[in-house]
Length: 629
Image 1 (cartoon, one colour):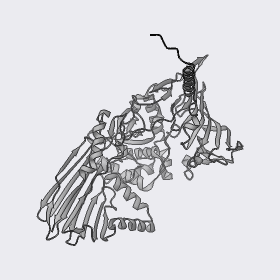
Image 2 (spheres, helix red, strand yellow):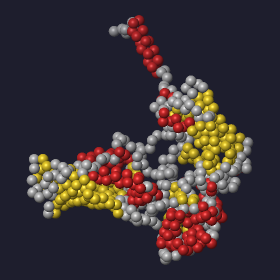
Image 3 (cartoon, rainbow, N blue to C red):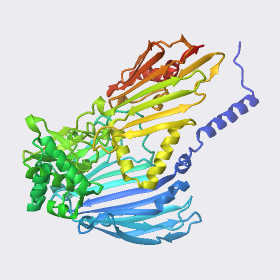
Image 4 (tube, rainbow, N blue to C red):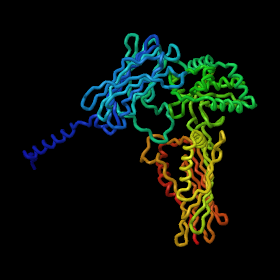
């Protein structure tokens, strides 16, 4: 049988379909602006150029072009450039708004302000504020400037850290740094997917990142582990410091230079600490004195705010930031015969463990003290904290990274992990149910450490009128449509320890009687929002130990019997567990519930089990007690 010859019609059909397919394949993808039109703003240009000179001075030139896409981004029309007067100068400022109809308007105002007005010790910290006009949706903000620095705080050194990524979309990203080779500045990178172009020319070396259409960094999943070198993304570091001990020796010299123990400081210290015989007691007395008599000024601890002010100056002015108050506490402790060390501090989730990084003082954002305790039991203190006793810290401090400043060259340490008792809340409820369905509820709730400190400080700062409104709102919430018979808060006037809420309310119809039956609903747990996605990329890390105990006793009205009492619960997924036990005693039922959260890490392979646990949690924990007349 012969081969069939295609007809002209068939050939034309094939040719037409081929052209359609080719046309489809050549379709242009969406433009960068179109892909990100749902964002608040995009960077059309983000360009930073750093040049380090042979004398260790350096110049940073910044250029940005930002397109406003939503009303929420209009605040970007006020540009802030912080600098340290005397060490840094801002020059070559250019700033414009390009309106949607393509008009180029120069900045409206430019002014230099003090970052910490009213605090003369910090008068050298300035900020240049540039205000742009007609910042509307569709406008493009353009600005550039040069920041010239006389050098780093440590003489004849240089360091810099950054990331080749952005939280917002960047159409054109460029970062370059050029330095003389003879300065010996080291380079280190972590998780670098966007490699720099490294060029050596004559006596200089340059690192250049040039990225087009940079997508925003992906959102982190909830409950991810603290950052590590293995999961860092596009991070780079430069430092001329060879060892961390150089930072320790330098900072120790600053501390000793500014540790001025005057006769007034010594007398005050001995008087304050004299009534106590223990290191802990003396330390507590000194910290309470500083908290009561000195204002804490919250400042960003960066490369140029590391040196503490002289202690005699801080003592006289009665204010200071974290490093100033820490050095003052060190001086007062020394006057009382107690040794301590300054320690640079950063929280667990603020960055990876600094011991993996090049020596960079800027990796830390706070300063605390390590006090030499009795029998080798040293402990950390933070003079800027209020309401925490010696040995107590906010939950956010747990496992924080520290770098001790010592004569031996310093060392890396960690804050202790918070114990379960510090995040422990206990609630005791007695619910007396009457035959008509009304109920009298008596509640005693003991708050956890952070909650108690927060509430104590909040109420202490309220004036009479605001305090009255606060308690009005609290009473309305406690009554919830019923009658509040009693409400008091115990422990508010104590310096430390938990506060306890005691309340008694009466509500009609709280447990309606239907066909001779009363139904008591035991509410189920809402699922955690962190485990809702179908898949997971990272391990699961539950950061804190916590315990919540709830004991509820239901007093059964006369003439009613128990028709149904739920079974006990024992649910556990490792990082979260819940037990609920019911005990019948005479005319009452007591439900004892214990919720525990454990600081632990689970591999991502366990995610399906964790998700299923929380998906089913509400159903499994919703229970009922049924009473029958």
